[in-house]
Length: 106
View 1 (tube, rainbow, N blue to C red):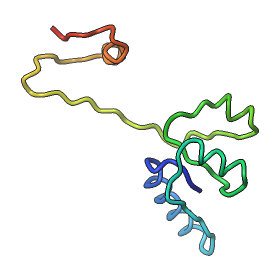
View 2: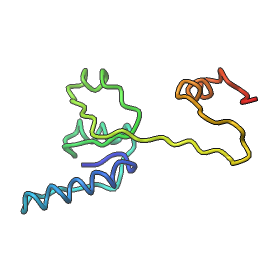
View 3: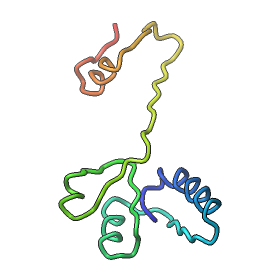
View 4: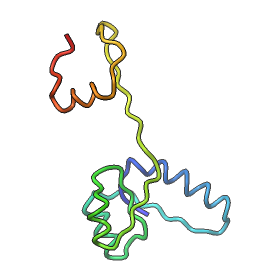
């Protein structure tokens, strides 16, 4: 397995648990590969599993004969300075801020 370094800690823990459950099983983890490199390594048969934390378009993978499995979701936490008087921000408001629909919290 190789790919996104952001996924490696989770995959390493899963691999360790798997090897404890199935002693003698070899799981090899790489050092990390970028998006194009991990897919090329997968296509070339250099790895059996490519790890990705973002930039995955399932339809593109499927058209290449690759199956994608979601194993986790990443939590996103927003922190603001205590001097900011805004409370109870909704998910929609956060999305609007990222989409530049909201440019001021006043």
